[in-house]
Image (cartoon, rainbow, N blue to C red; front, side):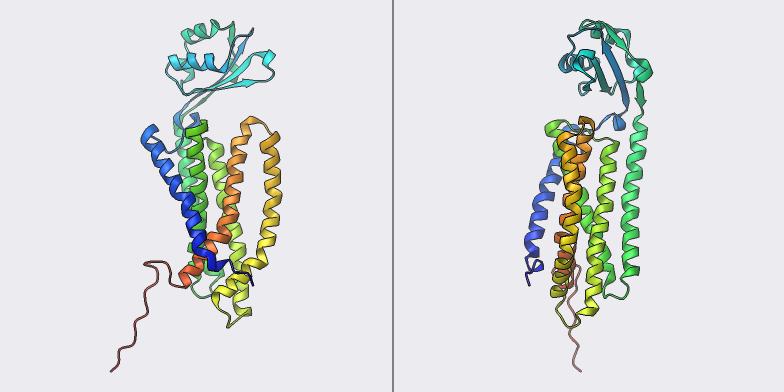
Length: 315
């Protein structure tokens, strides 16, 4: 039988190769920009404006230059509809009340301009903070609930608590991978963290947990079936019995997301890309992080978690 578990140290090294550079990137972003990620107006506050020009001449560069002169160097500019319509959406940290006649006058130097105030949206930074806080609480609650659920469901299996902890460890692995990619993309490509990023993150958390629990459940079923076999052999058998179903299920989702990335709209591509990366990480971590971690714990290979058994003292 082909053994995956015996190569667990290589899997741990690969995970470290992904996560450690990601943590360095996030720390670099924190040191240079003051935040772990490039934040959108959902978190810093600001407004979304729809601007219509009556003629040609407006470009992303010259619109951004005007907003930069009035205090927002990171305004996000996006063209709407056909180029002949000369319509632009501007996401700016400048509140609507601060868009003065001077800004409109500068925009009017490009071409006559109309600011569609009926389609303006103002966003408070407080909203983003509340959503972030709720997302953090949700992840913590999910971790606690999952540990409790696994301990109860696996109560007939020795050391059931370990299964819960290893499932949460795989979830944290996936969260760190997605956060690392987001931080790097913010530095390289200007990706901004918004509410959709939190949505992708929570989706990845749910997927990671579900995939890991399915695999752990097969281990739980096989332990009484193959009494007397080494624990590593039982775990490896369980992986081989479930990996084909896991991969088949995930491939369907991957093909759909790949199609959206290639042919979907620009506004959703960042969300789908993060979701794609998170689901790949979730599939990997369930098989190559959670289960190997469980075996390493059982074998006493994790420092500080396994105390050596004391030899009986002879009288």
